[in-house]
Image (tube, rainbow, N blue to C red):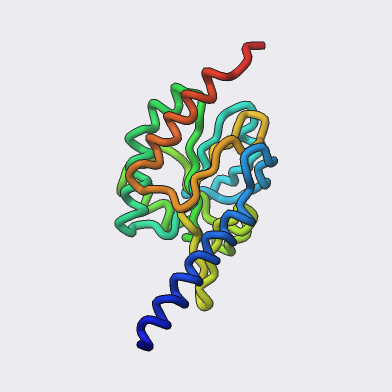
Length: 180
């Protein structure tokens, strides 16, 4: 009987957690929260540097974990399609610059990985998970338009399908763009 009470409480907590994510993550149409973080080469990257381009900003828990590796390699493999669509890809986790450097080198990632060691940027994007002794980033992805507004949000993104979902949405959004 105790396990049933525990299971019900855990399910309730999980549902509240999902609602909390949705409540604080920026929504389509919102301005993308600013950021300025070092990448794996210690170069500071900011949202402003991606103005006039589509930006795929994906948050992930940790370098070198199975799911994070699948997701990063999926974006790596889709990178040419994404750049052909006018998009840049940027990954963000709470890992440090050195860990990002090793991860990017090991898997030949052609895009920046930003070190949000304090989790402040992940928090602004509703993607920080505080586990008491340490923080990690939730696996959320944001497609940001060239004007710096959130175009699409992928909460609890699929490690293997996320890049393809972004490509499909980006193709649809690009078709609906009004030529100037």
